[in-house]
Image (cartoon, rainbow, N blue to C red):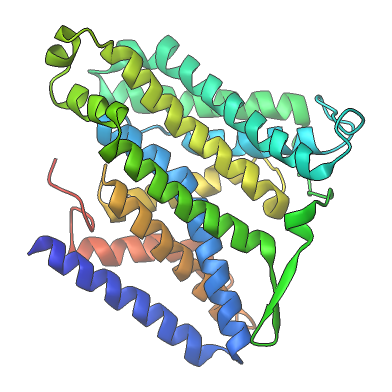
Length: 331
C-alpha cells in the first residue's frame, strides 16, 4: 500500500511538472528544451546521489564529502583535457575525443583512489560511531577543497576544448538540442541499469548484501567483508567523480560546485528514501525536472532564487506525504 501511494505521488508530480511546462512554454521546442534540461540535470544529480545512497544503504555511512568528489572529477577532467595543466596531454594525445575519454577514466581513478584512502585510513575505525563519521567526512570535504584551491586556485575554469559529442546538435520541433546533453542522459540511464544489475544480479552484489545482513557468516565462508565494504565505498566515490568529469564540459570547474550538488543530492537521497537505490534514481529525475521547470518559470521574473530552492521545496512536499521518503523504510 505504501509503495502504491509512492507511485501515485511520483506520477502526480511528474505529470504536473510536464503539464505546467507544456502550457507555460512558448512552443514545443521550448517544452523539449525544458524536458531535456531536466533529464540532464537529473542524471548529473543521480551520479552524485547514487554513490551516497549506495554507501548509506549498505554501510550506514552518510558521506558528506560526496559533492567534493564530484568537484574533484571536474578539475581532473578539465586538467587532462586542456593545455597548460598539471597533466598536459595535448601533445602526446592530439585527438580531443580520445583525450576526453582519458580525462573521464582519469577522474574515475582519482575518485576511486581517494575514496579507498578515506574508507581504509579514516572511516574504518568509526563504523560504530555515525556522528563521528559525519564530522570526519565533512572535514575531509573541507581539506580536499583547500587542496584543490592550492593547486588550481579559486578562479573558475570554463571548458573551452571541443570534441565530437560536445560539438554535435540535432533538431527537434524546430529547436537545436545539444547532442552532449543527450549523451549524458543516456549514460545516466545506462548507469542506473548497470548498478541495479550489479547489486541485484551479480555475485559481488549478493556478497555485498549478505555482508550487510550478517558479516560474521560471510566471513566464515572465507570472504573478506571489510574488503567488500571498501569496494562499495570506492564505487560510490568513483561514480561521483565520473559525474564531475561528464559535467565539466557544460559546467566547467569551480570550488563551489561540490557544495551545490551535495545539497541537492542530500535532498534527492532523503526524498527518495534513505538507502533506497530505486528512490534515488526516481528522485533524481523528479528533482532535475523540477529545477528545469523552475528555471523556465523564473525567466523574466524577480524569482531568480526559485530554481535553487526547488529541491528543498519538493523535499518538504514529499515528506509531508511520505515521512520516510518515497521508497524508504523506518530505520
